Amino acid sequence: MRRVVFDQFGDVDVLRLDTAGSSPQPGADEVCVRVSGAGLNPIDWKTRRGLGFAAKQIEDQLPWIPGYDVAGEVVSVGKGVTTLAPGDRVMGMVGFPVKGGGYADYVLAKSDELAIVPEELDLMTAGALPLAALTAWQALFEVAELAPGQKILIHAGAGGVGHFAVQFARVHGAHVIATASAGNRDFLAELGVHEVIDYHTTDFIEECYGLDVVLDLVGGDTGKRSLHTLSEHGVLVTIPTATADEIITAAEGLGLRAHGMVVRPDVFHLDEIAELIEDGDVRVHIERAFPLSEVADAHRLLETGHVRGKLVLDCRDAG
Image 1 (cartoon, rainbow, N blue to C red):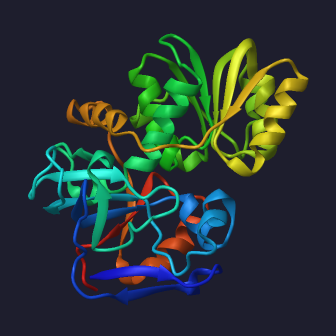
Image 2 (cartoon, rainbow, N blue to C red; image 1 turned 90 degrees about the vertical axis):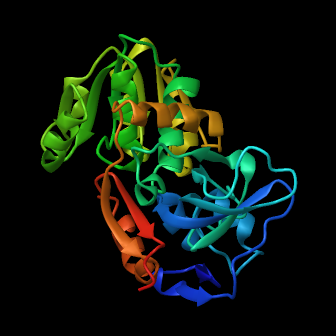
């Protein structure tokens, strides 16, 4: 079994590829999954650096295997598992936030963390889906309560969470505005975005007013300035936890609503998302796949914050 671990917080050079014997055996209510794809998310590099809420929870549990997104094939099931069987194609957000374990070619997961992967989606691509797609889904439909016909601004619309959010909002019947660089304009148009604002050349405040929802995937000053685009009854949902409190405080000062959120595993939401993929309404965009042995290069690219769609580790590659 191959796995990526780090023994201390730090730069990408703390990541190392480790070989640790045979695949793990599932306990009660667990399954062992042979991983095809493991998604990378910003929380991965932040935790590696010792930043954020997950890092605080694991600081006394190093060495640690990062990664929460996996897809692959069930190879064995533990006692009490009746919903899954060996050979099933599954995906899930596993071990969140303390256990992790996704950067490996085998992982143990609770059976209720896993959803069936649609036949239309290959397993490596499916590995990039759960955390980002669930973040978008829960932000839009649980926190913001986005309704058909509403106008929404989504910052960083071409990124991992963003490219799911623009598709979910469009399918739901919203008018979708997204900020992105000029190079992502055509990409977002293909995903059904109605208006794309180039944040390099245009101030979104001058283009947007009276919005029902803002999904802030950037945080900080962008989140605070976005409050001025809301209608009196609008709501802003901000995802970066580091600046959520200051944005919420700023909203209160203006008599507006803003909320932070932390994603949670939810297999029922994953099933709904899988249906949209089966129907051809939503697609997963993979910018680049890396073998496990090139995890440091993957983190370097991830940390730039300028990835279109998602990055994934191809755990089938023994390179």
